Length: 188
Image (cartoon, rainbow, N blue to C red; front, side, top):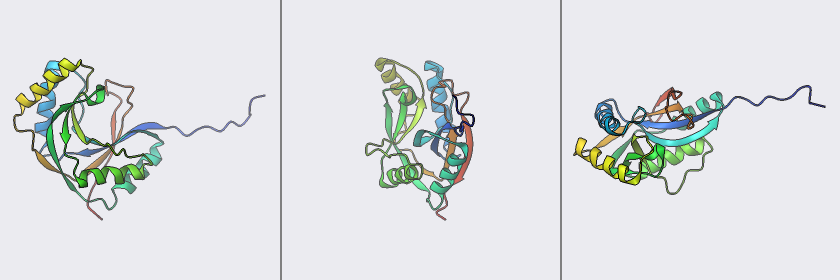
């Protein structure tokens, strides 16, 4: 006989935490991203450095965790090391961010609040293109990015905002992705 009072599981969604580049840098990054999409297609998304990757949570827990994680966190510098390529859709072509102490500690701090195991091999990056490409196509896309912005390597900027996004990784169109909350890092 079926349980007459089945307990319902709370609804969960997939969330990610992103470090947002400052407004002054976003047009440059968006231009570079748009230039790559012109040749390689792919969905449009906001420039960001992934701090906590896709994690399934209730909406209430996600909001509580981002607020807790950013409370007391100070702004920090991020610097582009190079244009690089990855091995899967969400890391097709990206800007490798120098893994400075501040960058790595901010990610580890935030991951800890989300109960997410921060990897010792954390590779901070700012994706430029989400797409399924061959290795040869990725190499060409890296060269294209370097041609589109010859001085992108060495670009330095301050991270002073983290954003909580709903990011269903099954949706490669990204149409379901949604910004939920932006938290300012003020060290208080």
